[in-house]
Image (cartoon, rainbow, N blue to C red; front, side, top):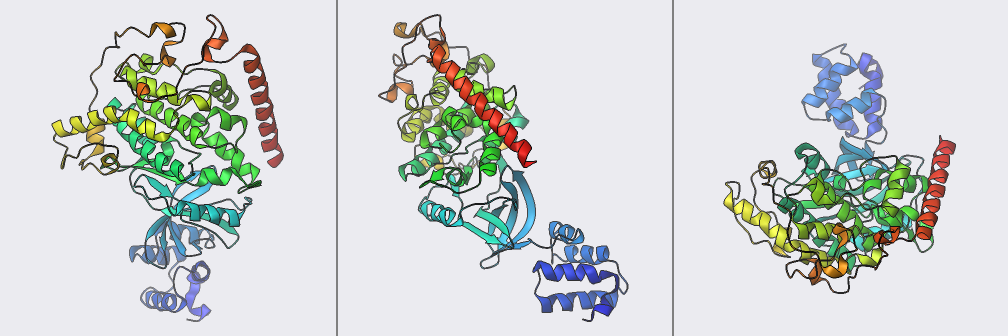
Length: 463
């Protein structure tokens, strides 16, 4: 079709051609037929027609009307709609041009610089991880000057939004979701891989109750690999700030120090958030939160939510140990410790009318969908308050804060099943009750303040 025949739609058609969304011959046929029936139409009318015919999506049409057609097709992916944004870029729902499968594609800002060769090595490493809870990134690439990462698309609602809506989760449901996450982490850790950025917004929960951990692999990009960093310092700093509520103390001191032990701490923060409806350190500035992760204990979870079983609270406490060595030796032990509490979720569903096909909750069966018609209906059932346990504390730990005492005298405790865990001795009446000497606190505080000062000044320079 000649340019003169396009009239007021000329610029829009030119942008549509640039986008690569529609084959040139097909585009000319569609536009020609439309203008024969609707001569002298405006670009917006043509755009609405294409959307109504499902030739383009509303998102694509809007981008083209804004003159931003470039970047709608990245390598083998066609972007369909924006579904979120984070510290490293915007996430889009996309379709593969080769097989029609849907993916989540994260597009990094143009200023980002990264090592694509090492990123592709990470993709190959995650290719062998086969677990329903793990959604690893499967592709990386560069197209039109833009870097992108791709994951299989997962539908559902983020754990963060569920908790924000429901205020807090029933202990058995929180434990059931945490159990699935721990199972996924266990498989990854056994393969020598870790998440590095675990937080409630990275956990997608389907109406079946099945949890999916997203962004598996981003943490590896932020860590140093063979002396090289996969992404630039700016992306690392932004990502650490966005995930500060669930970042392990050792990762705060050194952002590239992301390990399986750090995943345990992040899981503890996530489980605390589910049970209490708030993060371990919900208030204060970024610097104050960084200091809190380093030197403070969170408010005991049973003070906020008395219905949380004491032994479940003890699991959270151990996950939130400041020293990595004081957490669980392996993620498999977290699975074992959470098992009894997740089983309570199964019982609750069997006794309700929402259960379609009851399945036993075991270390392996817990990974599968449990056939619940509506997770929201189960979540919204308010738990009955459970009185605090009257069991006397272990006399050998009487000098420790209540929320860090071992439950070794209780055979039902998940902690008692994990050998090798000991609580450091502390001098009563000093900061050592929390496992820190005054000198350690001072040095740690100075280090955090220096890092925060550097980060703030770095951002000012960038701006």
